[in-house]
Image (cartoon, rainbow, N blue to C red):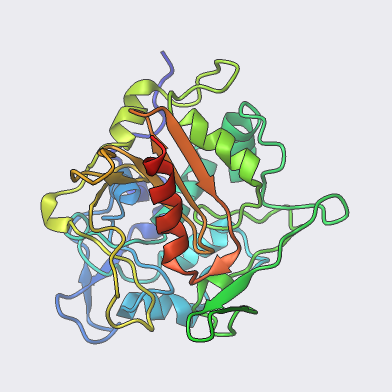
Length: 321
């Protein structure tokens, strides 16, 4: 049996000393200056569950605005180490374990992997996932002489047209996405891939095995990762941009959260309880349903895309079962 290198209960400063003096906003704070010492360091499990206290640039809270002000993750030249060191100097939004807020915690996990393994994130992803699954077109850089890179757009729901990405830097479409910087790595953004490569990953999540039978993730961990792990009081959760006051529809209403996946927990119309997956900022989407032995991937390049595409994709698949 392989020895565990990282444990769920490990505090993040065990691996990242820059978080030793971590602060948190006081309850009902109106300013970034209203802070206190954090009562408990966020741990690895908190990072996986998005209950660690962090935020994301595009969200509408004080901490998200501060991420924007310091330019967190906007550079396409900085290393992951530098970005996480910057993050360590910004207070948490809330005490760890008390809320669910989608966040940059995946980037912190990525940096912890680099520290523990003493190699780059891309090296570990390639060794543990991309090579075994033959995801040969997936990585943080791309040779534009060999591969065609799709253009990204925004969806204008007023004109019902695709437009070039808007200039507001808080939109995730304007984060740094270099094509050829070998030292670039992020936990939550930045990989180039193809639909077929990503489908190989989604199909692996049925069993934890590659097509050739190589174990990628243990069946025990896969089962834990794909069942709800957050309290009922955190559900339903939502994600909305800083410039949206009220969501017209919360697509996450029937979902709980596992270790990195949304997990369907209600009795839906499609007998899809247990279906899990996630989506991307450019309206990408994938789902896995082990009961029906189903994996599906939807790839687009449209930021703030029409939700009907995702909904129609989902309904069509389940209507055929």
